[in-house]
Image (cartoon, rainbow, N blue to C red; front, side, top):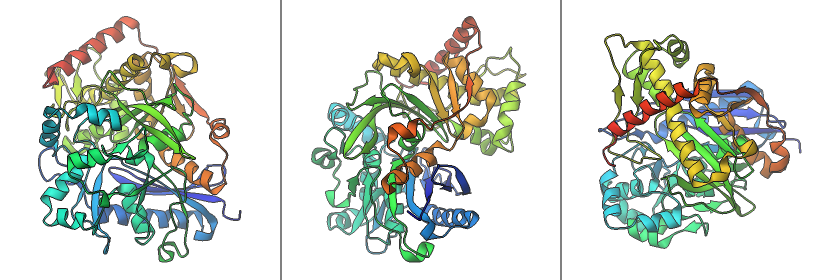
Length: 500
């Protein structure tokens, strides 16, 4: 094969990135652009679809230019994306009928509450592995159909298409020729039966969503079509798609049951590989598809934290305490150790294992001496404490998760560059934390899937052998100190929750 490079498109919540990898999965070029967030009402979060498309296209072209490569040098494109974010567009024009409703958005909380009150929780959980929550795409689709004039009529007539961000990008990249998604993104819609691997007619009827809206569901490594020639000078095959957290699971080579990874971006998402069978959680975790290859699904338990890096953004953009995220680690290290300040970052509710969409953020332990240093430490520690809640819930659901090599957390995402944060994470978890040499594991996973489909990269077990450790952070905090700090956190959470 003359084409020896993979282009990974990583479309995130606050920015779009493109990364060029060579045949040994080394990064040879990258480009990134942020785009605006829109907050039209309390608890509402939207993106302008054209901002997403423009930043994806421009960063992809920029990465190609920086690498000095043409379309003929690229064996395939891999796409990874912010999950659950919901779009509906016109099949004829490709234009969205409304801004994208972001995964963080809580506008459908009342709709979800009605579904719970009507007794539909067990149906949704048994089919999808999910909870009834505004987080997922299903009620977002229903909101768009009910609130955009003419949308429901047009959807029923087959004039409109629904997609998560991957589907929208695939549609645009292929010039409107392909309306498809992969199993991991489909599994986040609250409409997909993860056991059968198919859209569920009963759930569609429950939410009054026409099946004509839905994309075809394919493996994570598959031929998804070719880009329109005018975009990059010649067609490039799209060969891999996975939601961002599943792509990170692949990039971290968590292919063995019991392995756990946690990604720290805008939110934090921990996934535990549970093998070929879904595990029903007794602790409000999600059962989801980790990846699907050759028609075979591998499942995971997932814990979702809505606010991780977004807490640092709040310090920067909301409070003006810092100018850039890298300042938080040194500030936290210099904080007064005598002050026990806790931030419960429930800005858009609390995710697993609480699932309290009505909870709102709170600070505890403030004194006259509390300042930017203590705020920075509380923001970073909130991510560590929330991770502990997830890991504890995972171990309760699947006790085998803490045996042998599984008793390690593999981490990635922007926040893990902070040594202070990773050491505090190891201390709070009382667990080794492994940081890989390649931190961009989300893009790496997308690149691997595309390279696997292209025949450029090896099967998963051989790919796992290539995973490399950059640094292990081992617990160093005294047990009594850890116990005291964790108790303070749990008291703060109890005070924040709106339901028992």
